[in-house]
Length: 257
Image (cartoon, rainbow, N blue to C red; front, side, top):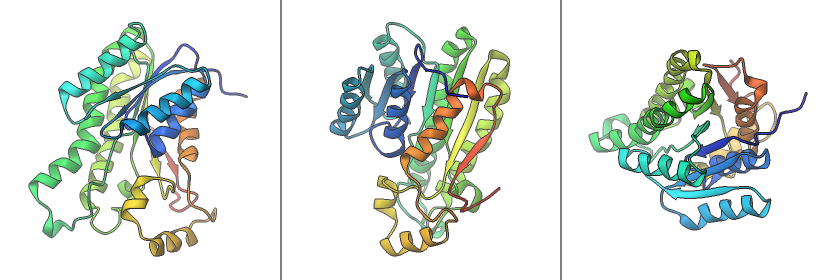
């Protein structure tokens, strides 16, 4: 069985300018979807993704947006729909998220707590809210949320609130899947483990910790953004028509469930 083309689909990938988001955007475009990506503060990276898609004769657009702000969400989704000739978004990848910084609970401030929860949970909730009416009208749609292995194990040092936010995304996925199932919309999540080639580990993980972590992965290597993108492609394809409310673990056997 092969994955059918996504030709005719209109996808939006938040945080699609780098790492996992970039890989997903490119993967969807290679399957024929028209793709919009959002970025927060690196226009050059975003335009590189768009150029890569257009070089392969695909359709892509990049829009700057902070997914924690309602006005930006409206600008993002509305801009993507206009770029696609008025077509509704039928594939939403809620990839934007961030640890922000490692911080113990004893040192946590209300401001930092809000920033972490907003970028990981609030953005997912209100991005989904914005595209749901269009999907309802189409009587079809795919929403894929990015959670994390941290949602299961509490995360590394100083990542407690991040882990809690990702756990909330996992549970939100299940609830939203029930809510939208009558409209032919599926909602699932991806739970990456140790994924290299990403700004996350370049920023928050030392080489020593990286090596120690990889040594404990049964498949013997760190994951890549393409490993996650492949799972995303499955969830938005017709092969996953009967899959909703589920979480795919992508961790090389590091944490089997």
